[in-house]
Amino acid sequence: MLRAVLSILIVSVSSQQWDPTQFPNPLRGGAKQCNMRSQSRICDSEEVLSMEGRYRLNNELGRISSRTEQLGSAFCSRKGTDAVLIIVRQGSKQLANDLNRLWFGNEQCKKNVVFLLSADDRHLYFSAQPNVDFGVDELQSIIDTNDKKLQSGDFVPVLTNIFKEVGKKTDIGAVSPPPDGSKGAISAILSALCLLVTALVAL
Image 1: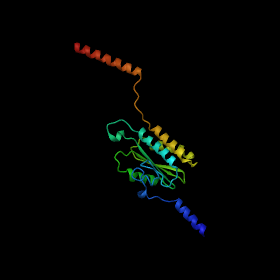
Image 2: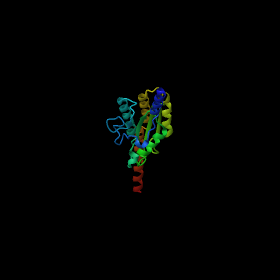
Image 3: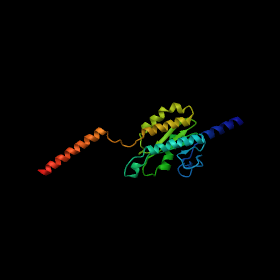
Image 4: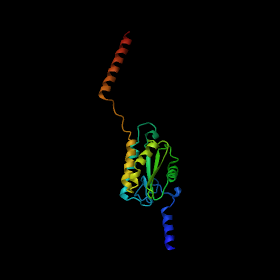
């Protein structure tokens, strides 16, 4: 009888369902509950990963934001996509959607993505706002490609690889100057136009 009760308790704890409204936000005052030293892009309230692993992934998430920044006059045009990672024992796509809506639903630019690792079933979910700098299908393809590796349970290197691939897809970079040959052709055209204008004025 005691064994049966203990088994029920273990199953109940392992299948904990999170209330999105009570979930700590790592970007707004939830650092301690998220097991981070300060504001970050990661919340691992159940300590699934090591501190070193959490900070390694936090750095990769920050690179996604910096790589998607662009030139432009409007703030939202310049702003990169902000990504956060939530790590729980038992999670779902719905939880990712709810957290995205609660935390970022009122933000002007709509350029946030919430990744959610459900550790017990070894699955990575995500919820992306409409203006993120990459396609949702493309992001899902990256996750699907790494799914078998994720099943190993060695989460940090697999998630690092996923976030690096996302960064590569969104690495816009500076606009390259035209090659020297193009510069020469443009100069020749401008010179010819100047001569034509001069001739017309003389007439």
